[in-house]
Length: 454
Image (cartoon, rainbow, N blue to C red; front, side, top):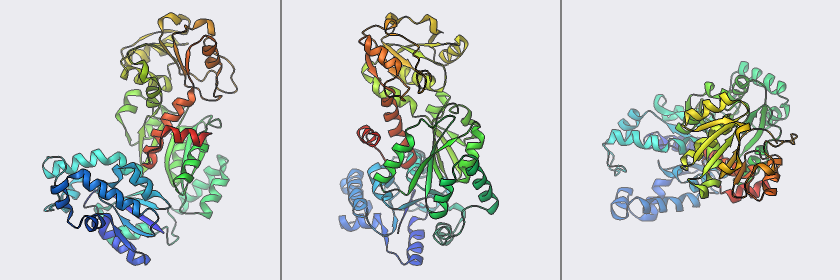
């Protein structure tokens, strides 16, 4: 058994860790103490002599040495900011984020001889670092516990409940959960949870979403990183019902697809700046009973088009995917025109980003260096294309965000016209890599994602 405690200084990792280790009859590993042993000096002295980078290198060595350890591990406050550390800590382990309000943390660590990291006054530094590390903390954790109102023994009791076989939800909630799983056709998931109470879930939410390759990708990545997780599909016509089921499950993350990327936002507790600007969420991270919304679609568009910075671009479509595309292209200093079958929708999206707009009938290939297709047209079993080879210029880069099939009718037409083509699989690869990092805290390369999809 491997239990990992992460979080900021003063949240109780060492105190809780020692109690857990004692009750479970396991060794306790304090990564800060192990760093001091390696350096043969206290941490403040390491910082004074060699600086934070040397401390982080020693911390990385210690975490690597604990990859296959059995026991309870208490980490330093910044350890999970390194995704490589997260991968080692997550390897066949369960990670708990211990959290507390900034004022509680400041009170607990007041008088510490640890050097500051920001040059700010102590209380301001706590707030700044908590904000900076929030994404990493939430991603790295399997479960989140607010330690501000519990004693260390009380926090240990919470962590030990599932180990003792105690139910994590009330009988009424369990009954509702099972009823919904039956309605969703997910009796196999219910059986998996009955067999393995420690199993955690992720899922894609959409209607339809049977075409998605996310379950294949995620389940292979979970196995690759030694995580006791399973990824499934939540296909239903009502986003509210999907979110309700998600909150009744031991679910860590949701990938959101059509038609819910905008509708789902009303059910979230926090939405990051990118998703708010785009007006769509494709990634939800759940921790501590709260739902955090993100958008990684725009990075899936931006990264493959970096080489066309400053180009003239046309976006076909005006939905959530189109909004992410426009956001990405504007960030690359492109001159963007939005075209849609419904001119009013194109106008509404374009005006949000100070772009030009028009109807699809107004498309002129000579005016576009880049064309991004952001509608469902061409997705299996649809065999249509909004554009033909004769509509396109050889100089144009055509990026079709549809990825099933891998070669869409539009991509075939663009190749016939001699255009540079970027298939939707590339968008999927790059957005999925960022999504996996947000949900798990582990960084994966595009090459690994492609390998897992092969």
